[in-house]
Every structure is written in C-alpha cells, then in structure tokens.
Length: 601
Image 1 (tube, rainbow, N blue to C red):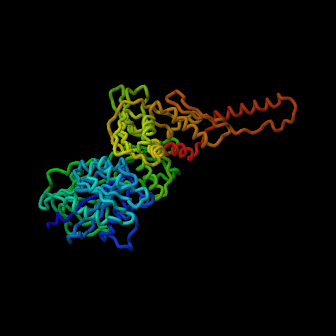
Image 2: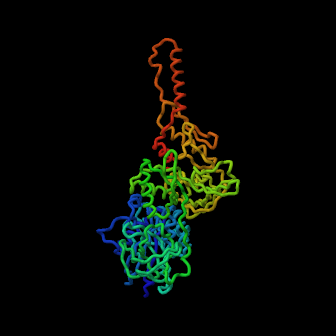
Image 3: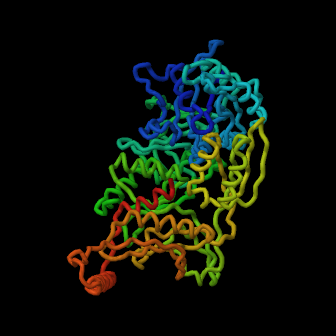
C-alpha cells in the first residue's frame, strides 16, 4: 500500500453547538494524540474565549496516527472548523484542503440551517461525506428522526449515519473505521511542480508567521526557496513538519500531506490565507483555484472609554489582526469620543469576539458605534461612492439613489413557529418568501432581506420566538435600491456625531425614539432643561426632554401675597433661560454605551 493510500484528510462540519470540538477531543484521545495527563476539554480550541463560550472561532488542525482493525496504520489529518455563520470562510478554506468530511447532526435538535449550508459548501468541493448522529445519550435524543432528516434534508444515506455520544465516548471506534473505509485517500504527484495551499496561519512571537499547508502536488524541504503566487513574495523555508498539537519537525512534506511551514515571515499581512506556495526554481503554472478572500460585511467604530488609551488600542488592534486576517481597521475620529478606529467585521459574533478579546487580553474598555453595512450611493454628478460611516454621508440634495446589500436568509424552524417566523421576516423588510417542507414537522423559510436588518436583534428575536429551536444561515446576494436616510441625534440642539446612524426611512422614527429615551435616562439633569431630538435633515422625528434641576425659591415665603411668589418664579425662569444659552451638556461615556448596547442586544 502506497503512502498516499494511508492518508485521510478530513474536517468536521456541523451547526454551532452540535459537538464538533467534543468529537475532535475523543478522536485525538483514541488515536493517542495526547496523554491523559495533558488532556483538557476542547483541546483544539486554544483561546480562553472559545472554551468559555463553547464555540470554535478559529479552525485548527492535528495530525494523528490510527491503527485500523485490519492492522494498517493510517495518518489522519483532522481539521476542526467553526459552526457559526460568521466564520463560514474558515470552513471554506478547511474544505479546500480535505477529501472528506464528517457531518454531525445533533440527535435532539436534528438538521439545522448551518448544517445544510456546510453540506452545500462540501458538495461544491466534491467532498465525500460521512454523517454522524451525536448526543444519543440525551433524554431528548431521537436517532430515527435524525436519520429521517439526514435522508430528507441532506440527501445522504441515513443507514450510513453512525450514532455516537462524543461526550461519553460511545461509537468513536466506528467513526474512525468509517473514516478510513469511506473517505478517499488524497491524490497528487510528489514529482510534479510544487503546489501547496495555505489554509490557515497564526503568529508566534518567536518564530514569526506559521503557515498551515496542504501539499497538493510536489514536495517541499527545508532550505527550498519558495514563492507565494498571489502576493509574489519569496522566502526560504526554515522548518516544516506535522502539527501534532505540538510542532513535529520533518525533513520533507509531500503531495497529500498536511503540515506547517515556517519561512521567517514577520507579519500575517505579508501573506494571504488561501495563497499557493510554489518553488522559485520550478514554479507551478497557476495557483490552486477556488479561493475567496473573507469580506467584511459589518462596520463599527471602536473608541477607547478613556481617551488616553488610544495608543494602547492601536497596539492591541495590530497584535489582534496578526492572528485574525479577516479584521480590517482604519483610523477614525469623533468630536464627542475623540480618536478611534473604523473596523470591518464578518458579522455580529465576530464584532462581539473582537470587543471581548480587546477587553480581556489587553484590558481596554471600548465604546462601539452602531453597527452598519456598506451602502452604495449614486450621485447626480455620475459618481458612485461606498459609505459605511454616517459621518461621510453626502448631502441629501446630491444623492440620486442609494442601494443596500441584500442576503438570502434560510431559517429552519419547527412547523409550530412558522407564523411568528414569517411575521419576524416581514418586520425586517423581507422581500420574497418561500417555504420548503423538510422532514415531518420542520419547515425551511427562505427570505430575501436587507443585511442591515439582520444586525439589530434579529437573531436574538428568532431564538426567543422559536424557544431556541430556530436556526439561521445566510449568503450574500446583491445590492438593491432602497430609501436609506441619515438620522442625527441632537442634544441641546447640537449634533452628536458618534450617535448618528443610517437606516431605512420606515424604521427611522422607531430607532430615533429608542435613542432619545435611552439618552434621557442616562444623561444627568442640569440646571436647565435639555431637549434631546432625532432629526432627518431639518425635520425632527423624535423628542424627549430632561427637566432642569430646580431650587424651591418660594420656600422662604410664608403666606402673604401670591404676587411675591410669582415674582421669584419669574426671576428663576429668566435665569434658567440665560443659562440654557451659555450652558453646555456633558454627555457621560455610560450614555453612549447604554444607547448602543440596548440597540444591538
């Protein structure tokens, strides 16, 4: 049996929280990849945040040796992938470097939206799929219904599905035997010109960038001079080998193998994940096709809570982007909040994760502006501009038309909740609705809706109205005409630039009311009355007042003529009026946090 025939490159794909990391733990333990003393749960999830929340944010890889029942020793390259829709680009990259995948279905939840989305991604790359039914130890587990859904929703053979409990270690041997029997070995010629796909990279402060590679064709040795085909940069290979939780140094990586390559690259911006490595002396004709870069879809400005922390925030974002190539940022400034950064994220979970990591790893408290998407604006002079920041919104008289990004949303829900889900979609301006009846009692609702509508409480509301059983996945469609307006928030008749936001005209008043009410609750009372208003251009669409602090000036008048009291009150009124003209309102940082947090939660 040749070396290639004993290699299996596979990844684990599933909806979020269906047990990918737990199954990866059991496979690593059964194959002896880690000693019992060194083992900890979610061993491939290196971030503290991943383990705490029970989610995978960054895909990870591990090379294992497995001796099958027939006595053959196989090399298994396991790639663990995230399950959340925000990180589907990580899944796409992992699939490109595999021949097969384990697709996990939760025995109690059944097939969910991201399971179907990942199935289509795997089919795009012609992967062989092995279904696994996990969590059979739960009281609510229904293996037969899960088999039915695998047949109806995924179109896979339900009798091939292996029932397991990754938590209790039941059925892990059967999964490993299924892997070596069902999934195909890699193809490739070790003598052909080198083509190696970089499917991931991370930064080590002592070694520089460590590239995770899958060698498609050819061979690679330390000392070889290599060229990165997308960026055109050349480097000498310092070290390579397998990734076995620790780095396992080798003398060569050949076609079909997965491993790491260190070339002394200083920053992750110098490479593109998805690039193709080839030899400088005998280059390949073309890079490996199919790579799509991660595109930010949600934009928000980050400002440090204390203005003197700007330098620390700059350093923190530089360090964070070294390990997160999908995070984009540029300098930004606000009259109310000072200096900050305009950042691009893959979705709201990505935004949440970045904020949490900045807080934990670098101890920086942040204020975030309201998340926004990228709008395309056609001007009367024939120009088209892209705007994601309300500060750069052009004068309404210059605007000819505005288009916003639309998505195709796929929502899976038990039939019982179909009515409330349809209503939720309509509330969020869903354009066309379609329904697919899947297995008994389950419906897929397909809607085309603006991406901007999904940013505000959509996912949370979906989980609430379906009691946790609804799942949601989306893909980008195109840009469509829309009536988008900029809403300004005025405090004491002065615009607060950090609170301005872009929204569809129909939703402008509702959001403006929310903003002014939150501000009225958060800003302390002053010596004069403060109006808080929401405005589109010169039209006020919402208002709330903060009443003045008043001293009881009539307290010293005991009885007597009413005109005396009236005179004192009139005098106070004039003083308040004069104070209002010269007084300025200090908006506390907590007010910004209160407005934006309740808006996105």
